[in-house]
Image (cartoon, rainbow, N blue to C red):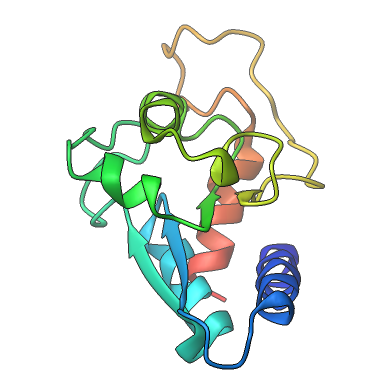
Length: 148
């Protein structure tokens, strides 16, 4: 629910600054669930692409050369957060050379902001059942978002 509100607020603020006949807002998401939300919130005002196809491990989406120009032209990048995308997104953002979507800029939408992680493991050695070292909230959050 918080993610829907966050995406709605961000897209509404961006839409509010555009002229009536302006080009669509280019949104790049890290995961397909986020792309679906962005499409539903933005409607005809957005053009949405997802870096993941839905079959990859969310921690290891392959870094394809085609992602760089896609991110270079993006107005918004939407990510799960909780370091879910730590293996691929930082390098892609740097390579994009797009100041709008860099960390701490208006076009960088981290959906984990304002959510407190729970059940955070004390170790990141991945020998336990979960590799979500930012906490189980990320996994539960993604599941709850996908299932309404």
